[in-house]
Image (cartoon, rainbow, N blue to C red; front, side, top):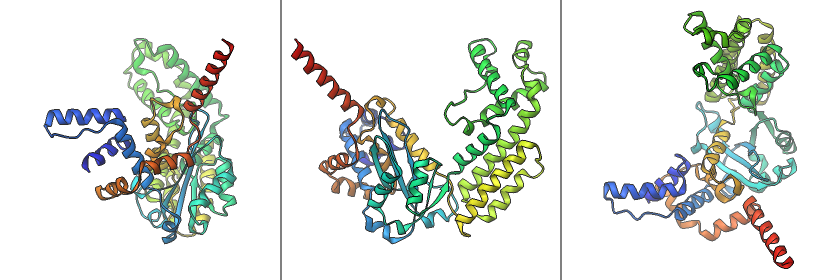
Length: 403
């Protein structure tokens, strides 16, 4: 059983490929002379899928207590999207500490060409009585927001995405930010392969760029310090000449971003409550620039919204654990993206819940390969790879008939 447990952990926690798991056991056997029965990559794949299916629960399971749902849909894999809804006991969300994989139960894991709000509601209703749902957490995607409204369920906007929208509202049309990011882009393009490459700034992500401004301004602060201490060459100083007129803007924006980051860190680890809300507001005391005041106003509006929905309780306001699930899954399938979304997405479910040896043993005994195939039939559309195979067969038949 330890071989099965280790195999699943290597895939879901360490990001090791199924074929590499076999190689690891081969070399463990050679080096340590353990006389192991080395599993094939197909066997490891089947173990992981079985473990994933075992994490799903029936409707009766959710009647025991109140639940918080975390929902999101993956970015496009081929021509399909993966809807993932996780369930967390409400009592766990009242406790201090960020959520872990052990706190999660997979509620919905299903593939579709698109996910309309009505479809999302229908899938959730199949698995849980809506009276057992305390609130739902997600980004501000229109389909998810509408789905929770149709469910008559409180929607908590994820703090990461909400802060990103706040930053965007304040800085999107800011000429100084545009000048700064353009200068960084030009510096990267011109100097990445030069002898002054050490001062080249980090890349900025194109998607969700307002969620990832902090590294750019951390770099700016470092360059200002090096310029102030005269620790750069003349060529490097010339390349960084654009910083001087933007120095005050860089410093001010950096101060805003690190405070926003601190607020996120507190609420992600301790949950949102009135007590912590008053504490984090003090982080912006003394900051009275125009941009800082706009940020403070938007944050206060978000806090008022959360206070009403919290009803005096501590609530979770972060879907980071969801992003982590998708991140790990993308690592697992990184070499097979052209296939599209297959039943390999069961790796996401396999990451969750209790994974001790007794639970894994139970999963191996109770989940058959037939059950895995049934789950695939009910939850996975035809993959992009299968669609390409069908197309090639049609082309081949037409070619033969023409010949």
